[in-house]
Image (cartoon, one colour):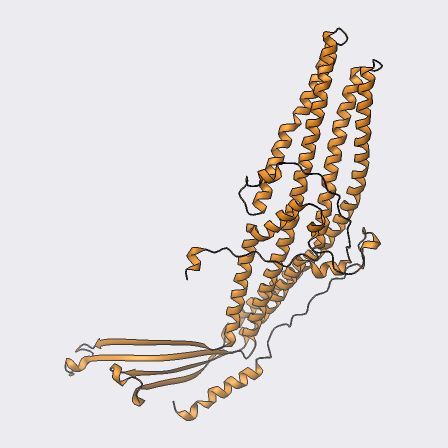
Amino acid sequence: MTDAFLPRPLAVAVLASLLAACAVGPDYVRPHLDAPAQFHRADPALTRAGETERAFWERMGDPVLAQLIEDALRDNRELHIALARLERARALMGEAGRDYLPTVRAGAHAGEQRASAFEAPGVSRADRDIDTRGAEATVSWELDLFGRVRRNVEAARGEREASEADLAALQVAVAGEVARNYYLLRGLQTRLAVAQDNARNQERSLELVLARAEAGGGTELDSARARAQLELTLSRVPALTAEVQATQHRLAVLTGREPGALGELLDAPAPWPPLPELLAVGTPPDLLARRPDVAAAERRLAAATARIGVATADLYPRLSLDGLIGSLAGNSSELFERDSERRRVLLGVDWSFLDRGRVRDRIDAAGADARAAFAAWQQASLLALEETETALVRYAQSEREREHLEEGARASARAAELARLRFEGGVAGFLDVLEAERARLEAEDLAAAARMRQAQALVGLHAALAGGWPERMPQPQPLAAIDRR
């Protein structure tokens, strides 16, 4: 190869770099969903434009809940898995981007070889010994004439951005799951306290009936009814206790701890703080713009579209430029001398024109993947709208339910008190007391469950809105086998 030949491949490389902006395959266009202007079930006062509040749990008035969510956002193991996947996507995008640049390798070798007399007839034994010493550097570079590398980088970027959105969506889910389980715990503890308080009242009723029976003023039927009512109430305690402990275990694991780690913190029931008012809901287009699961689906659609271009590029020639510079000599002292110089510049062409049917099949497969990704984005958008509409309904109705049940609980407590006074005054039978106490237990239990559902409905609405969540990342955990590299 002469020096005069060297500029020709380089000229091709320059021409290819100028044409690289022309990438085959479809150019991605962000899709648009015709969403309604307003939510059907939302109060118009809440649908003003703008971002929803940040870190809603900080306004819930419960420092224990706030700390649990902060711990979960830092230590939840599912978030660590999502973070590792994001790091992987970032690394793969970096690898794809390096295809824009030449690949450079360097090496050296030393060897001895003896040819047989059969291979070199008539040559002396000493002359059949050959020593070689060499060093070389090679460069290879794919000329992205039809945009295969560019489309591959676009696909890797889409996957990276989808992984970022996946992590954000999981943060929303984890924070919401912690809050929902926390209010479930407080609701269960309140229901347990209601059962225990009613059991104490029923124990006093049983003692009163037994005392009357001993004095000749009561009946065995009243005693049996009182004991049956007490045992039925006490039977609620073990099941509620088990649910309380199971929910504590769930919260511990959500915050990255072993199941029994939060017993001391959460055993003591906490009073229900007043729930904050909902500040803003926004509009459906606002929602779709900020939902990370919708963003993840849209980014995967972008990646799938780019992969059509990667497959389409195989319909065209793939050009590569390879170069070598080095030295080869019989001993080390002659290395890098003028006569030991080696060099090579090659322009290679790889074209699958004889296998176009297979290439077309890959293009069709990539197109089908893109259509599936488009349908997945549409489904994610519709599910986001459905979830928010449903959350709005549940929150509004849960507030009305709670108001009615709390009023009913107050009335039932007053009725139980009056029934006891009438029984003690001798103007009513004990059956009225039992019925009033049973009704009080049911009403107070339902009221506690309604408070829990309202809190969970508010959490669910914030999770559906997914707006203004804190942009924090869990810290990757060191792994000795990896970090010793």
